Length: 142
Image (cartoon, rainbow, N blue to C red; front, side, top):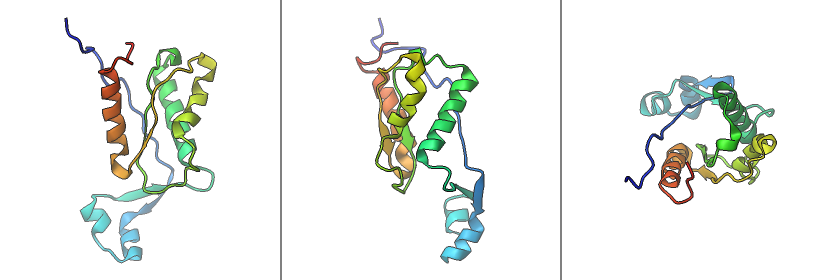
């Protein structure tokens, strides 16, 4: 008998970008670093939020879109890790995961493991690693 769970994986993924963006070539000119963003990072555009959006509203939007897209039964969710890939700290120090838990209120599921992982580009990768570790732990209940 295999002690590790099988038949697990990424069921769905959702992405959301704010509608406003700046061409990176223009930002390179402004910052005086021609080629850094377009050639060095391979970026063409960078999205940004207005005052009507923040890290929490972005997370709520993308999570609700995912829930709706796959008709997710929130009672079956046992782990929610939020990978925040940001180099800013305008999240008002409140956990994004705690904000997302309001989406679970009507399901009655208040026992969801997980936390925020904030670390620039590595935030999402770290969250994925933590999800794998959770699946391999005694906390995972299938």
